[in-house]
Length: 261
Image (cartoon, rainbow, N blue to C red; front, side, top):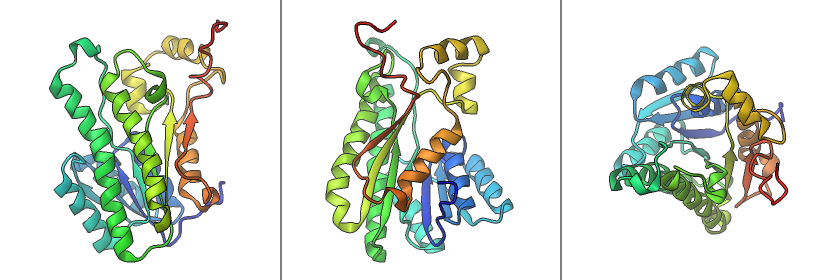
């Protein structure tokens, strides 16, 4: 799929100021899409746009808190005004922290639910409204979740519940929006070597080696892994794929049976 192109397409990427979000935006722009990125802090998304423009692409940065319907609507309106209505969307914006459920405050719960689940719904809805108004006939949404949406994981009650909700949201929207030509899928990465995740979750080679030993593929994931999978789901190569979740964890969630070592 290295020859996939998105010429003439308009992509919106939430949480586009770094990590996976920036990687998605850069890849889409390098393959011909005009890209609108949003994030809560203006400086990181401006840096993403600068990188895209330095490579000859076209991009727009709009500060946006995906929890706020008015800001979400303004983001997609700005995209439509600059490039035309988006026909590709990556729901990447997220918030998370590790906390035992028994100690999780209502504010902490609400914050993660609002960003991950509510934000994915608000962005998907605004995307579809602008898409329909523009008369587009083919579109694709990819939402980023995680394998613990269905396996469970200590300390992630808020995030796991939110991401499980997003997974079902994509399945539901896949059914509702198929007549509009919009496909809706999810990716579920396992541990991925991004600057933020590496620094906060597995900062040493010893930790990384221990985590890799528990993964059948024997390694942690990379941004290239995640970008390639997302590119596939956004592209016409997956034109008959909707309502699905593509797991990107080297088989890490699988060895859970009674004979697992």
